[in-house]
Length: 295
Image (cartoon, rainbow, N blue to C red):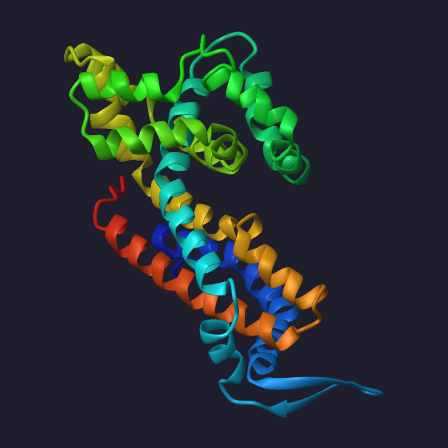
């Protein structure tokens, strides 16, 4: 008599079903352009009647971006540093915002929609963010033109007097100055954390409350471990999402579609892809050892 699938096998097949649409999309939409960009990075392209003709150039374009290009090395380092600095700020803010939005209060559906709006309006928001009007608003909120607001320097002084280290203080004040950037890139992460928080069994909190645990203890002993797999997920998403808004992506786009140097642009893309993959691998290996999975 034929046996049915076990629960573990059913879960495995459900996972496969979720992966299949991505796999088909990769094969039919991304695999060929990815291969062509790799070919372009090693060849000179010339326009011909049939499209593009390629002539093998070896590592010429890779040598050019590292040794001859006036801005690539600096922009690459700036993008990497900005990414590494923003990851903790975005993840911590997302978890904090999701914890607040998970509370029961009137109008929480509207509040959740407001936090997700920057994702839907990302392009417009970033263009507005760079305008002088928003810059003046940010200055008024964080410092005040006339010096009457709570400035970042005052926050830094307060934290130093409270015993915080200088490096931690500098990081927190820098995050406050970048608050609009952090909020605009936290929409998806907030939703991921919110979904995770809503999946935590209320019985765990009830048992902790009976045992006399405080809200602070419940967060670190229940909430944080239960959502730790999502911290890893959001770190990966934040790294991938950085492709959409950093200065290096702008440089690559301008090199390809303004300077019409597709080979040089392809070489830049592959260097950035390799560097980001290495960073992502290191982060995943470091964080995955601390992740708690509840069966």
